[in-house]
Length: 310
Image (cartoon, rainbow, N blue to C red):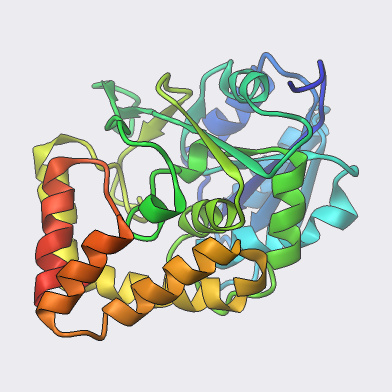
């Protein structure tokens, strides 16, 4: 398992996060695992975000601040991954972070305890405590009862980016693949797809490790509660997910040489079924064994397949 004190590089995409950024940084400082550094991409902030990061560095923390590409959060995270060889020690582990959450003290130590230091690329992620902007009304994020896999990743992302920790093999895979996508939906879904597609492992922890704020600025937001699940199901049915699948398939094809032969075939069959007539779409989806985590979202997936919106 993980050595006693591996180095973890925290990658954080920042843009106009001054209102909530200090609490997130403070939660880094309170981590049980102390051997970490922060690599932040400031994506053109016009508030005090950069100054807050600089003060955190001046307080004695290992912080490097880069200019982001100004193409959105996914591009900012990919630029940070690409910058790792020049700003992190060899063999580093990587944790992703949003700018507006609060990490529980065991956020890093729990993940390190459950990932292999050697072996295949492995991703750790966990459930979260969902809160309002003032960290009130704590409730547990949705469970993930079905196993993580490429067959799940093709139609659903269960790896919440703000909880992701990657072992060194996974970091090397991401660095190698990071210049291949032209556009992503979100960086964490791509990471889940890439690692499972390449034959890596995913550990999903049922214990929450962060306080996940919900506010108007959330890019996608939590998927908990019946209203949120109905909204997600509606996104499958209204064609939003189809456009997301377009982007994911394109990104995976650009990295197809990194996938296992079996998963390349699954990807090709998934892409092909989307152009079939309704009955063929449904039968091919059943044969592929793709699945989502809940009954409602699984039903929406089947309806989407039948109606040509998958």
